[in-house]
Length: 155
Length: 288
Image 1 (cartoon, each protein chain N blue to C red):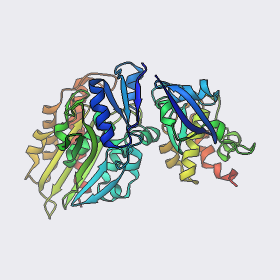
Image 2 (tube, chains in turn green, red; image 1 turned 120 degrees about the vertical axis):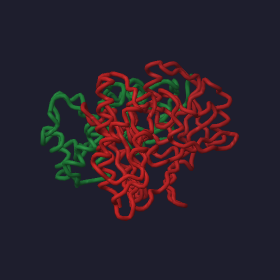
Image 3 (cartoon, each protein chain N blue to C red; image 1 turned 90 degrees about the vertical axis):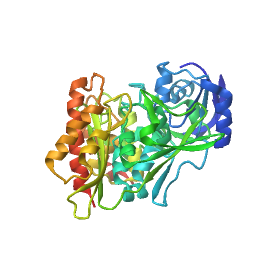
Image 4 (tube, chains in turn green, brown; image 1 turned 45 degrees about the vertical axis):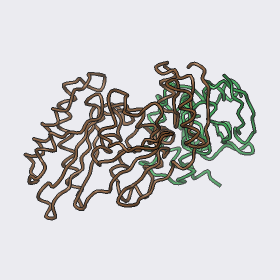
């Protein structure tokens, strides 16, 4: 059973006919070719598939694609503007907030959602917000530092 | 996940009509954090999924006539951040903040969580201790069910197939009352509890006697349970460490936990006594 949906991804309008049982992560990766969003645990725990719907972070592995109907979706591909990386992306690079990189798209999208409502979060606020984004390489210190210092790159 | 008919009714009335038409093969979806996992694992295979995403009027939190009313589609994150909840029922905000992670709390709704009825959830013990009631709506009207009477078995509630959880009503606490929710988390911070306990204690003006008390536990039985045996040994008694310890021991009468990776059944029963006592201590310390 298919359903026609209209939505925006990173500012671009899309109109697609999707099976009702298609997951948002699969629509982004396979129908739209936006492979920046990763699938890790598939049960909403690891955060690798984090995207924003109308600015609010969600697990795209737990969201049906049809949830996007009429909404604005932001993926990691949409963070850079006019060829310039988002401040939090620049900060992850400057302060080494990643190693293998598989969790990084989810980390930076979740961090962007935090910074949108709290531009200068402290360490406790970062830990509380980012608790649902797992990283098996960095030990988190560099990720926390990258988010704490993202304001240095804001214009 | 099998394919299904997906509907997006624009009002509760339309949703009730869709539910009636779909019969027992229909499932309501709100945030989807629980239902989508169960559908992916083929534990639930509805032929019709009815989304409440276009239903308005169920996302408010308000206070009137001595109660806080929470719409069924309020997200966990919205509830946690609500000024009304933080000001009037901080224990409820703290309880919802214990649920999973910020991302899950953004998606998951109050009504959806209650209908899911996993006995390990955080909010039910606090709702039971606070004396909350749940509003169940259907085409035939609505009814109110006390939180402690709502959960009937493992993942089962008294919700009829044509009913939707439209809201929760929580009475404000009496003067000289304190509340606490404690969650024992030996594994990771986003996990379900090994055991959890909520307590609401009302003291006399001198704060030396327990006038009233309500206690509930999660993760210790097939449903969240009210620990009436613990309450009975405290009501009317002076605030004393020995009494709180005895109340903790009495809580074991209400437990029949399963052994799993969060602890053996006998360990959970022992920990239930400890966490009920600690929840009582914390509630008494908070009383104002």
